[in-house]
Amino acid sequence: MASIRENLESVRERIAAAAHRAGRGPEEIRLVAVSKTQSPERMAEAIEAGAGILGENRVQEARDKREAMGPVVADRAQWHLIGTLQRNKARTVPGLFNVVETLDSLPLAKELARRMRAFGEIPLGVFLQVNTGEESQKGGVAPAEVLGLLERVSRLEALRVDGFMCIPPLGRGPEESRPHFQLLRHLREEAQLRGFSAVQELSMGMSADFEIAIEEGATLVRIGTAIFGPRPGR
Image: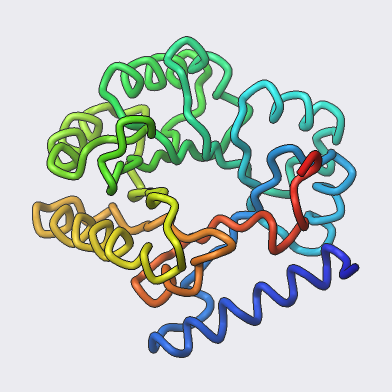
């Protein structure tokens, strides 16, 4: 079985190849190592191997891991929340996450902003999660409502909207994700045309389809299995 370091190197090579096919530089794409359910020891191994961003799904799990790893190790990486954030959990974000990628409502944005102001570290970087497949069981704002939410969230000085994020519907192959990645890119272009030039990031693509995402403009790809192997318990 390949080590985490070897897997990271392999993923980076695939990122570079996909970027080259799209006429992009590999430095344009950042890797989020999705570490949900992984042990603090394996996460520390990933950081030591050069993983600069960790993606966590659950607030409490991330807190426990940070405490187990200690600040000397944990603070060597950025921590992104990539799972659903309930409004009553917003109080736990300050000091725990550097970026929240799953903001999808104004009430949540206002609560996050309030908590960040009280904590004293502002602005917090956020991505608006877009439900590109308009799936009822999935979080995210509908594509038609994204720009309206962007306008409102951008008025909150404690938050900084850096980009958009999506999780396409589960398909039969990577190509089925392409229209969703294209939609997210088009939404970013529309946001920039409306004057939101700071909206630069596109967080899209996972282990099965990140190469397609890069071809469609991803600036962050969220990869777990290809780095850590199958999640524990699977």
